[in-house]
Image (cartoon, rainbow, N blue to C red):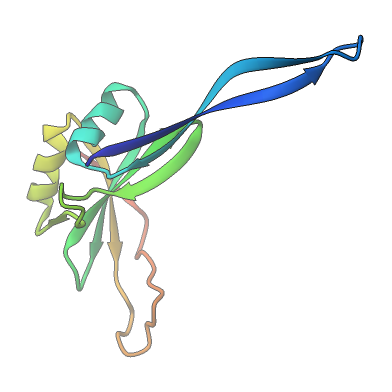
Length: 137
């Protein structure tokens, strides 16, 4: 299941000056979306001009993952690209990441390289080494 959408209608009561209560259906609908970020959804976000940034996050000890930043109802959200089964999609090298992005029509990304300074004392916190690198492909 790629996208779930829940819709609720908001109703409010308004009292008029003559002490008569009128119910007004304002027709406001609020959408709460729970989405699994896939390549198909990435392509749709690009076409709808809601895509902000794609980041290739490369940890020295783990495979590369792709993070998508996009606008949803005016708020910036970030999600990792996942497979249809819901697992995080990984890439072995930049060529694979480029190919995935090209298939969605994306030709710009940022490379973030994360290196823990000492595995024995790094803990759960790692930091990016150096500035983010801008990529065009």
